[in-house]
Image 1 (spheres, rainbow, N blue to C red):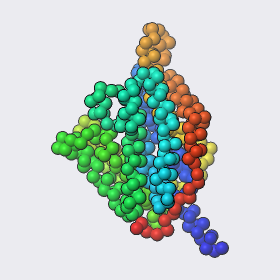
Image 2: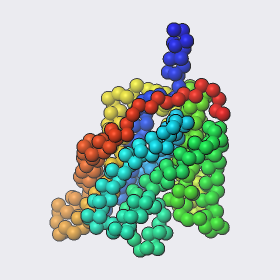
Image 3: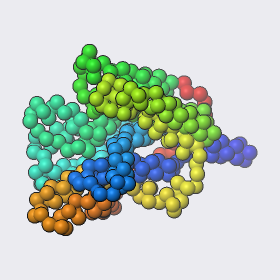
Image 4: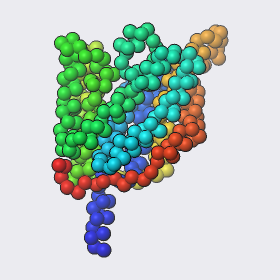
Length: 383
């Protein structure tokens, strides 16, 4: 009985729990950042209100929501793979769940894009092969693509390779590999951007931005090690946030915020990935009841529908802009061009469609692959 109580107390002090509402909240924050970026910063008109225009420009960093998704994916997927490593159904279980999670909504979106003639059959085939992040292919074949598909392609290529790596190396080896990716990838981007070793697009090619996912993998390994306690999560989280802020401050005078120079090309996302990882560990360490409470419910809701919302919202915004441009000149046309009107109508429709998709379509497939998996809490040092 005493041993059981000790184990329960020790387990309660771990960063990894069966349910982590903090991740749902972070997903909600990520999709809202992307939604505001496309909804306000991409506005086809401006407002006479200067204060509002400043707020619109403040959403320029909303694209970093995609990087937050990458960090979360690296953390979640690596954790799932470590927890199920050694199972006889290791590969089948993982890929079945990924297929049931990703493909239904993805294929449905491809069908919609074909119907509205956004994509051709050839470009849809390349998207179906998850090659949308390699722009050279589309330029070579003179084909179009759909913006959100590039980051999904990066994640799917990660899903294709990472399970085999996790299965074949020790946890310690995986930690060293993840750390190596975090250090080498910025160097490869620098070499590619400087044309010393042209390797492709330094912002979308999976083999050049793998550090976005690898840093999340490092967090997953840390959280499952003997050091993965709540207090250590808070300390590591604060330390990473401070380190990321310092890198950003040092790099700011050298153009780290822009993609028009070598510093920006190679390091633009690095401080943010570090900060996002720090925030992730910090929130897990705090384990505040706020994240499972009513006040955070809207963020959890957006986190729940984030995948479908990410898929559909760009098409809604772009089609809305096209429709407004074709309308005859009138006072109400100007009203439709206002950023807030555009955001309210397009975001509202996108959220409704994403919720309907999740509730009545995606959920059916998710239930097919859903089964309880107890996380392994590693009680010894990473070996």
